[in-house]
Length: 396
Image (cartoon, rainbow, N blue to C red):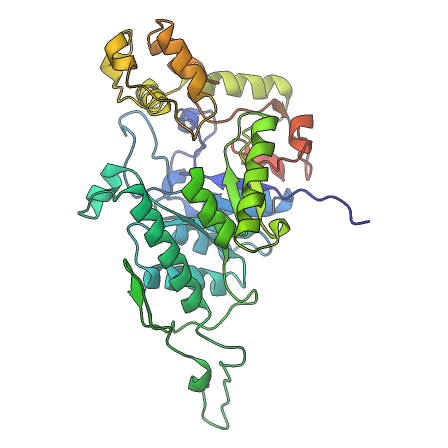
């Protein structure tokens, strides 16, 4: 009987950590945002600590106030991972690329290049983009949800076709015969969809793994359909063990509907421990990070949870009955129903916004690190593979 194995993924951000105040922690390299050597050190520590893959989220927009916060995302995830690829050997390298505002040919070329450079360790997190500010950076508006996902299906299919435009043995490198490649094995794809198209082929040979692995991070019915049809790995945001298991079951059902073996699709559940050299140090770090929350962002997210636009100047205002009449809990966050219930009880947004467990990312335990070992809680062992954030240097 095969032993049960857990895949560990670590999410990287801008080089400081996931929380707004992480850049102000003692000992932090204040130039981490632009210091590729720092990212390399993080990646090498993760590789020594038995983490299987690194993941960069990304949204092409400045979405924080730089007056007191570091950016959420890396300067360019693919370029950072290219630097990391040259200084690591085994760890997987996954980056986000939007199907909404990128052309399939560019996505295919960039991720295939990373795959070749890393000797077959690249992955593409194929997602749609919903942020109007990000759309404005491309001189466009966010399309309707159904249209976004229709384009996403077309984009993924074209990207995969471009990745496969070189057959095995196409790169002959025959000096005596003066043949660099066999063009009969390198073919255009000639795909035309309603939203995107490409002729191809790519000018890049296959990597050791053939082509990059596809990940997906969208929620709801559209996201599940995309993940079930194409993804090998899916990032999820459960807040309880039961929620995580329900999301996993829904994902397996989506894969089966697409005619795939559900075991081919692995779910990575978000889990954010605070790691340090002692439990006391971990708790002190957690307390500091909790006190550095961005209330402006939290208030906006609370609004998204209950389907109402909220701004920071409303943080001490109770929501009126007229406004609450149009409130709807978000299907993408299981805490949304409780958030709406609290609003209807007469609370102002300030209380829930300050509570780390209500309008923040997932939280996990604070604990002690051990070289080459990462302890996880019983809830994680129940079937939810974790990611992690702060304290990368403690892993190896």
